[in-house]
Length: 605
Image (cartoon, rainbow, N blue to C red; front, side, top):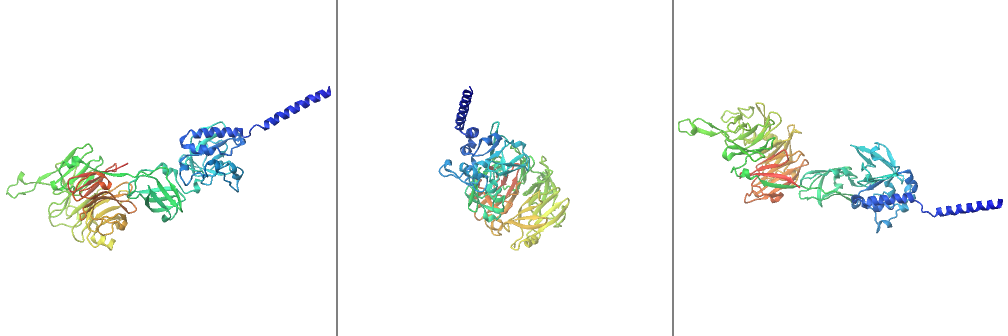
């Protein structure tokens, strides 16, 4: 009986051992294999993650990792199309086997392909199932490879090792979560664009400045080659994380590339370069004006412009309504017939030219009536009255002092802040220059002597046909036709923004650029100064722009022997001279010419 029981137990023991041997033949990593299969299928079904789906098949994931919980980070496809961050491929991914020495990656390197940034797949698997929204700034996470990922939070966005991670999972299970990345995990060690820069890339004009942010740029401007759709861009400022460049004049929409030390990165999104579209406002052409002497725009985007040939100022509203301001007065025995009556009525605005508008929406217009020029004030809506605001037509007159006793030859007007009006005076002597009216007093800002002292190359008296004011900085910009320069005045100090001092229409930087006969000026909110320039010798009439770094770019216009007002984009459009410029609240420009046309300039995609 005893031997029978012993024999039975022996049979049982042998059966158990056999069963265990069968268990030893069951494949290992079953949980890991299932997780990899599920994640791979999930990523493959998402167009933007399909590349990493193939790569994740190689993940060195073990059952224990799944049991402990993990988090996978999936870079988007775009990072693999960029040569700077692409996967190292030798035929295909299955052929890639890169050993990584000296750290925990070595244990799994045989089944852990390396990416171009030096990272391996196990760098994209974090130990523990985490929820991104619960991470705290300054904490750290550890990957299966042993890599430590610092957590930083900026404006609600979470960054791992400097790479922004998605807030929401793209796939999850009880043991793991999967999130996306816009770059490879070793992004901080790479030459790369800032993903935020890519997200906020806005359209630019030719000649605009562009700030490119990223990392590992050269701190030497010359050490960075920046191109926009294959056209080299001038680099003005450089730091490891920031480049400031000018969009080339002939650039078109396309990718941005940066090359440093023979390494090139390409933007994942194109930069849109705006087109400069010129059109003619037909309703204004139909008024049969002569030369458009000046243009301003009020807060409602209504245009006011002067027509010196017909002694009038006209307004043109956004709904196409025109109003004519043409006040008259009986001026003694003006016709010399010995009788003062209606036959002696004359136009108050005698040859109105320069025009400006103040903060209270009052219009000021300069005329050439009498021996000296005068400045009148108009009230919008009152078409029959014009108030003499400054100037004295008959001697004795003075250069400065009481505004009603001052003789002036106003060529350009510009309202400053408060009750300040600037005007340029062309007296043909040392008193030519810039003046300011504040309250009831006229004072000299800069005369011919000051301009010549500011630049030793200046030999002629200034002939200022354009004044623009930067309300933010207090700077004034002046277009000088006789000295072929654009000036800037800050705190009373004059400097040359651009212009060689020689008659020329030439793009370039600062004094390398050339102007022929600069006239109207308009400033935008980015610090770009638009200039109407007229080369009567070459019959070349253009709209040009100076960016804050002094780069001069011709945006529109060309040689026009027929003085046509031809609509079109950029250099295909033609101007019949550009006398005056104004800008509305939407950023559109308006240019007046010699033949009664006002051209609208818009910047379009």
